[in-house]
Image (tube, rainbow over all chains, first blue to last red; front, side, top):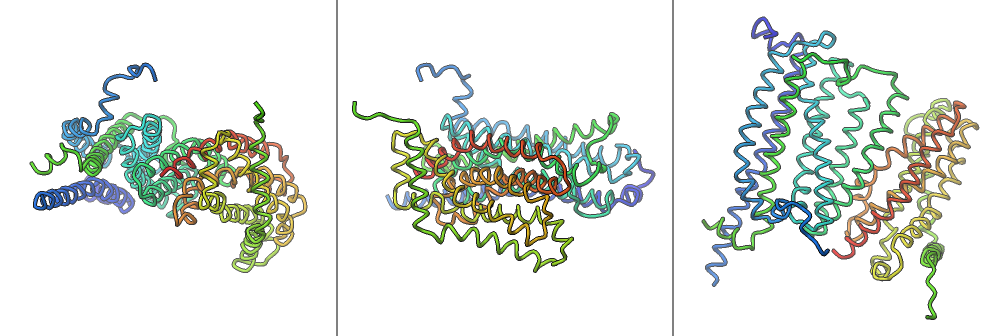
Length: 59
Length: 250
Length: 229
């Protein structure tokens, strides 16, 4: 552990704002990259299921 | 071609979207767990246990995000160009899809690298943006990604879009070393040897081991996102084939 | 056999045709030059007419203006041939596409890059570029603008089938122009400060040779893709 206390850990020797901002942006980018394809998948599946139902009712 | 058997069998299997969908389905959980573990462990290690730098203090910890994202942004472009070339030469559908999926991931990671580089510049150089050689090269790489995304979305036919972006990605690949060299040279011309984020004499092991963990973690994360996107792309393009119908109905 | 095929036949044929076509549409010829002049005029108006300041930025301004003027003219390179079907005929013909493409780019350069280079000293004078820099400016543009035409033609070939190609070309091509811009303006700056120019011109020449060898292949491939799609 390179910090004495939790407050030190948050403060990062005065550079807390920059360090935590970097890690927060990283988190946002990672989460967006994961969530985006998952939402897209749900959309594709509902769309295709609807298309299949439509084709079945037509024939 | 008389003899087509000179490539290993898995290469031809990869060409089958269905096989690809099934194998990525099996691999996905392993990579997801690996990415989660490595990234969480790497972040905790980097933030709490790695020693502070003697010159930069704790702002040095930004390196554990900045360097992996820069490496990933560059290798993602390589993968995109190589996959595009495979798609052009062997007319392999899956390679086209991989190339298409690379662009948005690479662009987002390039943004991450630029943002962390800019934030790191504030405590170190005192301004949010500095025309540092590495940051400028990354900015140009980001522009190359944007060009590829714009071209891909402007062309309606999927096949033509894939081929056109593959040509553009290959042209970019040839140009990247030239751009990198010229930007480095331009930088030495205008800024006499400034303090760089990544160029430093031999890092101690307590510093570079967590960095290595983060780099591997970022690669696993890339693999997860790539597989997620690739599976969507396969379903979207193969929606008229029997196995996808069964998959959606069942 | 009555036909004797010559390797350079299609090259000169395409070159002559393109030059003649542009000669008959003179406005296309003059527009990039006017644009070049106007962009350079904007800088003293927008920033400062102070001679020492302008002399400092002149190499970069002239180079950026030349780059943008080339870019502006790029969209029309294959567009009219694509629209009237000539491009399809060229792709179907047995002549080597490499030579035809090279001839078209050369014609384009003779009608934009070369006049820009000749006009550049006038802009240099307007922006108070020191007299020592003039040769550097002309020589660097002479070696640099053909490279710009070659790279730009790749973008033009990729977007020829699209209706809104204009803005897209700049997005695709501008990042590729950066090395030429860096070494081109550095050559002018070197000439102003009295440094030897050989190194800069050698690098610009190397980029031009690389472009001459590789770009026509990429342009040809891109044209085939755009036309078939």
